[in-house]
Image (cartoon, rainbow, N blue to C red; front, side, top):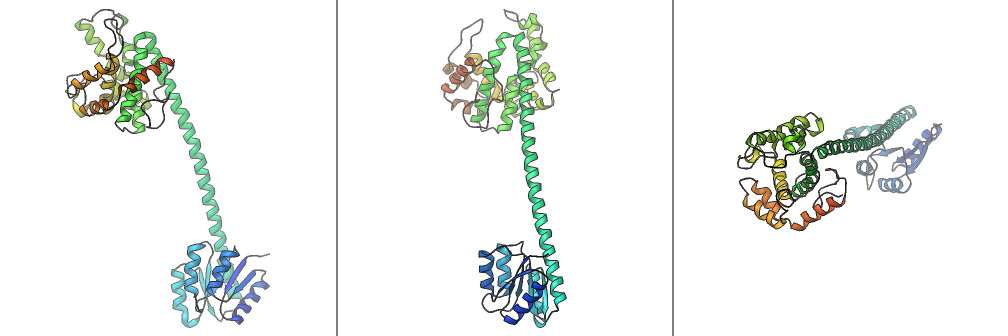
Length: 369
């Protein structure tokens, strides 16, 4: 049994009564009002309505004005315009403005019911489509959330892979352990100070963390030699950049980091190795790393000397601006207080494990351990 509520809007009582009777016989629930303003009040205070049947020519708010109000406030409620034969042009214009259909007075019962049935079926289809779209959006949102979780889990597995590679290098060269972690933290902090995008920082961090991975391919007799290396040994040691690149580039998610591994010993003026890259030919991540690497080298103990101060490192890096280092990176470095570096160094020393991706967003100075 049909029970749809239909709002009848007409300023002629006889027309309202006839339409009401026709609809009630077919088990619809008609509600009668005499003008557009009453119709608006009903629609706002007594919803919902499934269909509006409205005369066009009415005093006050006419049918066209009512159509515009209904389309703006309740666009899913169809309207059928009722008009005399000589106003058919107005009725067609109303359809262009969003009316579903029109009826010409005088009409037969069958015409009215057929038009009402089509309009209500149209409304059901619109509602079903809306429900389908809403459900689809919810499904997409749920699947997107699942994908985000899966990507987060995958990225964490990437971190574990990086840590495993770093641990393998630590076993070969004990001096590398603390250096790799510190220089990664310094690189992240400096990249943030330069407003590098968060996703790019992740790539830079991975490259910094794995910059010395090529040393795994260097013979122990050279890598662990306590004294100064001869020319032949220095040449072999310099191969660690290429060897590291060859190792890392085979891992798809580390291809961006591989370029940093390959270029981390290049100098801004072209005097570095292995390819003698110059200026912007050097990846930005490698240019940032170069400053962070020197900062850690100067402020860390070595077998042949004691660690120097952060202030001394600052002066040396400033001196080499434009030659070894990118001036833009140096400029950003010089704006950062020494406290940042000492805090990061102390924090890394307190924690046994460190992942280059153990940070979120771009706020703060360095990783959120």
